[in-house]
Amino acid sequence: MAGSKWLIYGANGYTGALVVEEALKRGHRPVIAGRSEKKIKPVAERTGLDFVIADTNDAASLKNALTGVDLVFNAAGPFIHTSDPVIRACLECGVHYTDITGEVPVFHNTFSHDKEAMQKGIVLMSGIGFDVIPTDCLAKYVAERVSRASELEIAFAGLTETSPGTTKTMIEMIPNGGLVRKNGELVRSQLGKGAKKIEFTAGTYSVMPIPWGDLETAYHTTGIPNITTYISYPGYIISIFNAGAPLAQKLLSVKAVQQFAKKFVDMFIHGPDAEKRSKGRSYIWVQARDIKGKEAHAWLEIPDTYRFTAVASVTAIEKILELRPKGALTPAMAFGADFVLGIEGVKRYDKLPGRHDKQ
Image (cartoon, rainbow, N blue to C red):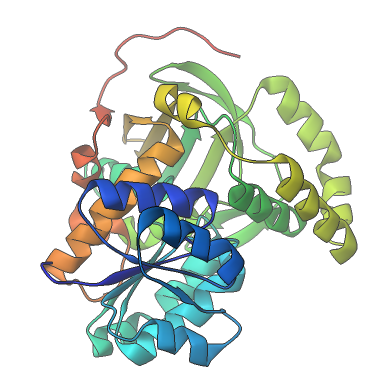
């Protein structure tokens, strides 16, 4: 890892700025990049880091930005727009690629380049933050306790505020409806259908299915053919969501409405502040089951999702630069089920340590 040079694309964004801060704390001096000098230059002046301007719509500028770089960390979401051009530039230049996406199509595209990445001797690893690192590691841990598991359920709870980038990603996901994996294939479902209650270490939460990235990552990590991913919401919100989902899908399918919604996000969504990040906790539950009904489950508690992402992503980058894995991989495929336990503040449970109900 000594002497390695890496780049943060989208360093001026909410999560990108947190990763810059964490990198500096740990003695790294990454190059920072983005498409707007007006937004990137102040970050460079504040941190003393070198910067470069690159646009994902300009292949030449991307390749220029990657000159002399060993790894790219892409923090510029929605990744459905930015990941593919950066991946292609990384493949051409022989540079490791990472991002923090949660978008199913992005993971699908990343895995489609596995052979090319192997040939180039680089790794393509999407999702090196929340929620993928904790869910992927816990999915591998649980799946290894059920031989030939056929069903996997993954749920997370405890999210408070979201960043602008995450909110915009959700806006783009809604028009496509729900998604589950059945018999190895991704299948469309009614958005929100299948709500249930799950016991987390912090209590019992109402959850509903969402089309999240684990539908791809957990499938590649575990090989389990039937996967559902859930997020927690209060029961009344789930009821409202189920009633309004069809209308929301239609409205957000209109480009003008989606653009207006994103402008609203830019004006009013800023992400949790430092105090909220310091106090926040999030919770993961995973269950695997075989066709005979044998099952195993486990839980994780992690720090606030954005604080976790900053620490976990830099930790993953350090691991990649040290181990130099190859191909399109998930974090658990590359580093094992216990990788997440090396992140400060993470706890894993095989049994519930006690509970109180939360609606």
